[in-house]
Image (cartoon, rainbow, N blue to C red; front, top):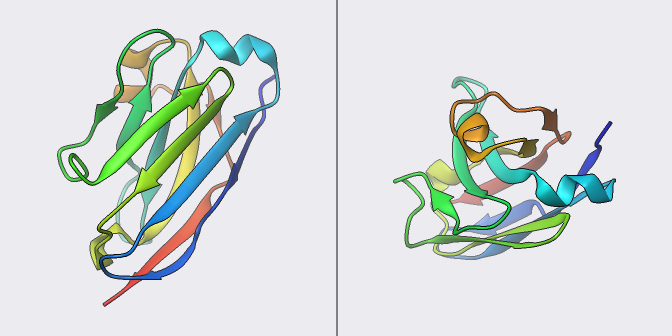
Length: 120
């Protein structure tokens, strides 16, 4: 069983930056694809970014050029720049055996989520 622990959410003004981090509890997760989703009360959980085990990050179109996902073994980070009010959501860390799994929502493990609020 893999547990994911997120940190780094908060309140920021539009145009500001936040950095989210997530740590997996077991070393076996180092070979998993890890990524981020976000969810608002009125929307389904949506893919944001993912970092596969041994290749480059992938991003949703809505965050390309503003968000950067990086990874160090069992830790994943999401640097969020130029934040907008529509980035406001609960952000969830995720892990899956493959990148395709994360992209399709077939996630094996979820974190509890961290709130990001962007004020206008």
